[in-house]
Length: 399
Image 1: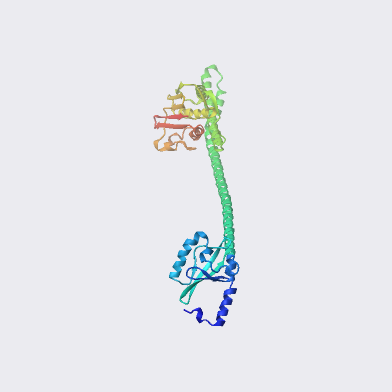
Image 2: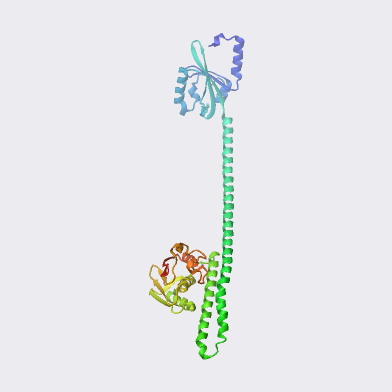
């Protein structure tokens, strides 16, 4: 290794000039860490006056919390000296004369003179660079936050747009379904109305011919037929209007107090005209008569269930109606001795426009039980049934 003693005088002057005027701080210490020489830049960096660093230990320039570890690092360097940068991958700090701390970078080297080893430390104050880095970091964080916020706003807008599209598609599907229902109803109604209208027209024409007292029974027969036909038409219209209101979301439970047995009797009186010869309707009630429910919904439920029992039962058959009111619930049971529902079709019973294959020759819209199910949803009720082909069907409503 070249020693300072072998350097020419001119070269020494150049080295001294480099030392004195270098923009980096240069500090030379002995093996014990005592500063034997420091250039003006290092004195300025650490806040000392000229020659103020000479005689200080290198630990005097290290923040107190790092002194102990720094001594160990210095001893390690002395044991295996080699040029190196200190603190790679971590932040280093120096301590000024007034005790303030600042970030710095240090590179170490060494040389020997008169068999003694000296350490040269090159020091750079990186306060401004750190401030710039922190500023860039802060700006980046602010930009990231703004990007997150804008992304969130954009995502919310996209979600709203997606929800709007879903709602639009849903509304269009519902409108299409409603229009389809109306079209099917018009087709069905034109067919279903033809029979009762023809019967009414025929009966009215024949009544006009029966003028004598002896023909009174014949007149009564045709009047009954007219009443039955009008009742059928009313039930068809009632089904359609109820279905339309349910589809448009215009049905809400409006609970009032009324007498359930009186309601059942009114419904039986209204549909008496569709009873077939010999059919017997047996009605029994148990418990309190007063209920607090939606009057119109209960009326429509009873109309559908009882009219179905009459329509799908033959002449001379019995229809049994039981109502039970307890503290916990209201129960309505309608049982008939009719054609029953084929087992393989029972799962479709509450679908709109569904009609079992064994009742296609009987008037009806296929909407009634679907409407009953919707009303019971609004009333927090449920409906169950048991049915055997050609034996009969029993519906049980519990609210």
